[in-house]
Amino acid sequence: MKKILTDCRIVTDGKIITGKDIVTENGYITEISDSGRITDGEIVSLGGSYISAGFIDIHCHGGNGYEFVDGTEEAVIGATDIHYEHGTRIMFPTVSASDREITYRSLEAVEKARNRCRVVIPGVHLEGPYLAPAMCGGQDMSTLRKPDKEEYEELFNRFGKLIARWTYAPEEDDDFRFTEFLRNNGITASAGHTAAEYEHIKTAFDMGCRLITHLYSCTSTVTRVGGFRKLGVIESAFLLKNMFVEAIADGKHLPTELLKMIIDIKGTDRVCLITDSLRPGGYGKEYEGRVFDNCAVPFIIEDGVAKLPDRSAFAGSIATMDILLKTAVSAGVPLPESIRMITETPAKVMGLTEYGKIEKGYKALFTVFDDDFNIKK
Image (tube, rainbow, N blue to C red; front, top):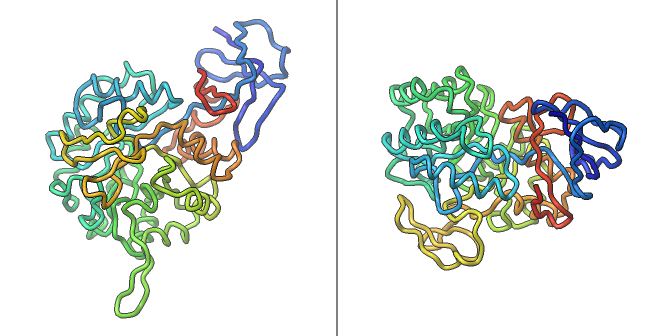
């Protein structure tokens, strides 16, 4: 059925467009027309709200009391539901570093449940287990290991069509065979939880690694070896102009000044805002002070963020994508450019050619919000 979305402010491609209607049919955008010109279809008034392409979260561990490592269909549907209510329309469920049994069970649950979720799930993001112990962060240290060819090939043979992205530490990939494997099989390679130096990142970049997992969180910086300075992951990400980066824009992991600095250096066409949300994602003050200890890496919710029990580091966020949008705008990033970092840029880095813009030929998948960034539809 043809629908005409009218009385809206369209946010796309770095602009806010008024006086236009969005015409959709059979799940696709067929035209952006002058308001009122086309009337032969169901007319849906958005009451002056903003409308953008559906928000895309490429890094989310859970929410609504669930995590994807729970390995149940209930967890997949429950976690994605809360993020849907807060504007997410496309998600790459993230599976933390785990043992073989948990990883398989988690992937099987997503595989079975994805078509019953309200969000679109193009694939899964594996965060580990090939990570650097020195940059463990909120990952389970006991599961971390170097890339195992037999293991990752077996996993790919079983779930190849589901695995869309894999975070790993390039310096742990001694011969870069794993990097080559990811490239050859169309999996988005992402450097994260890594103590790499520039030569590691540059080699991985030349072999197809184009993304840094949550920049400034478990990513190395300049070190000195025998008096000589070595660039870390952070500086390498800034130096390599075509490297994309993630930023956890929950207002906790990165002070607004640092978030703005990342965006100013990389540009909104190279920054993806992510939730990195854990089990309490989508909940508010009622979780303050609560300890989550029935999991591989316990954490406590304090100051609106998940912390390791010893308060030495953050374990993840409890944010949803509407919070990311508010944080970016409060950091001084114009609304259209903030929207780009949760729509067009993540679509680009994940190869989603039909999502991320409001444009003829793109999927009719939208997020509607008001002036205060509250999700309306």
